[in-house]
Image (tube, rainbow, N blue to C red; front, top):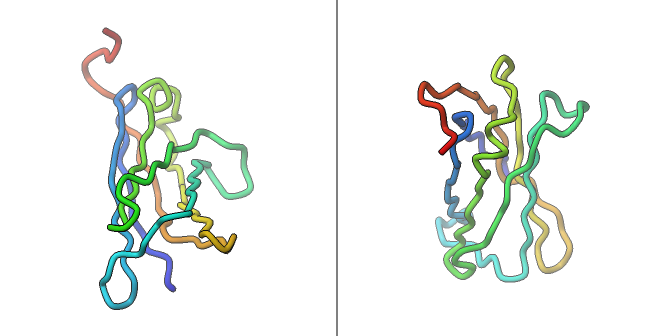
Length: 115
C-alpha cells in the first residue's frame, strides 16, 4: 500500500484536530479494532522529537481515527522551520503499517491565545 501524503497547517497556541478514515483498495472502511496508532513530529527523521499527536480510534468498524494536538503543544512548536510527521499503525497481528506522511507548517496567531 502506498503511503498517502497529507500536509498539515498548525497554529501556535491553538488546539488541532483532524479525523482520518482508512479505506482499503475497494474503498471499504478498514476495521480498526485492535489497532493502535502513533504519530511524531520532527524537523528531520534523524533529529530529536519536537512533539507528538494523540491518536484515538473513534469508530473502529468505520475506519475512523482522530489525531489531535493540545494548544500547549502547538504553542512550543518552532515556526521558523517546516516540520515533518508520519502516522504509523500496529494492527491486531502486530504488523506495523505506515499510512500517512507529510509536512507541517506552523504559523503564529495574531491574537494572544492565552485566556
